[in-house]
Amino acid sequence: MIPGFLYRKVSVAMISRAGMGTLPARRLPINFQVALLVLLMTGFVQTNAVGQVHSSGFAATPTSGIVATPASGLVSTPVPGIASTPGPGIVVTPASGIAGYEHVSSDSPSYEPGLSIDFPSGEIRKTGWSDMMPKTMQGNYYNEFWTYHFYLENDLHVHITFSLANFGTFKSAVSGGKLFVSNFKGGNYHVFREFRQELFMVDDSLQKMRLHPGRDIFFSGALPDSHRVRFATSKGGVDYLVDLSFSDIEEGMTWGDGVFRVRGDEMGLFIHIPKARVTGVVAINGDTLRVSGTAYMDHTYQTDLSSKVIDKGFRYVSHHDDGYRIGFFLLPSKRRGEEVVGWSLIQENGKQNMRKPVRINVRGSKPVDDRPVPLGIEIIYEDDEREILVRQELYQHVSFLHEVTGIRRRLARNFLGGEVIEYVGTGTLDNRLPVHYHYFIVH
Image (cartoon, rainbow, N blue to C red; front, side, top):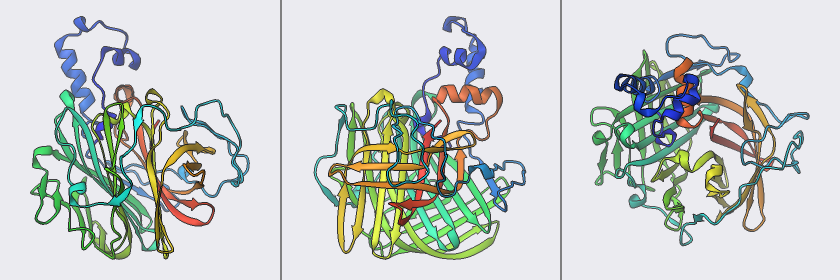
């Protein structure tokens, strides 16, 4: 399943950029047009893919449908002499307080609020079921995501996303489910599922959403009193089961109405579960672990294709005995100005505080599979308070084009405007708090 923010309309210019020459639209035979659409859709429009990575030395044992995460993707603590590769529109500056980062360039503009964004109205407030409900499901283009992260014993990390997307005339609206399991007895796994949107079910009485009436993939329960997430599926000869129940659920929060407006487009952000306790089971091919740990969940949506507005996203979560620190930030593409969409939420010593970012600096990067990925991120807030997130260990990274090769991959990259890769792992916040990060970057 490719998220809707990757989609653009097919154009003859795309064919030219892919190295196939320039053909006027009127000269493209209908058979060629149909074949091109089939080529595009087959293998990456519906990537209901299954991946498996064995991390014993992070050397993969390839089988059909299995994707490897090489050891070169792992990053330990920052070391002197790391070369920084600035991405488009990102400032790379010398890092105060972070050893080992080299100053590369500060010529690119930093991300700061501009004139093309309207921030949410109001102050911090609690969320409810009406905030959890789908905000899209109408219109030609949209994306919506309910994203869960589970931080379990023995560094077991589970990431589940439920989604809705409409790609306009290119593809029918769909619902989707995505599961990452990292460090399960030394292995990493991921699976994608996709269904027609009309099969998506919402039950108000149970406060439940289900991807398909005949599939065991759902979340339910009236927050903050109770909640449950279940993801049971089989794909490519691998059986997956995640069934987790929540307790001690912290109340959800959002900023005002939760909606950022970027030149007429809406981008919503709601943190429904800042922190909760979870218990249950995680199983791969019947090999079952009884687990416990903490959970986080947020809900985001866009009323247009995100590729028009978003270039990169950073999410971090730090759960500790005294509370939590959470941040979610979207960096608009250079076509949309220099805004920071998002905010951070802190609960410590019995007090809760929301902070609004005004600028983000990337302080150094280190390649993962020859692609630059930030190592240090400095977030600067309205009150000039700053915090620094340092990426250390990479659990796994997954491209939405990992099954596409050759000319199809070149077509896909041009069509999508790049290749979106998600990165999940651990690091530190302000050199003292352990943190889990989730990046999604268009390369």
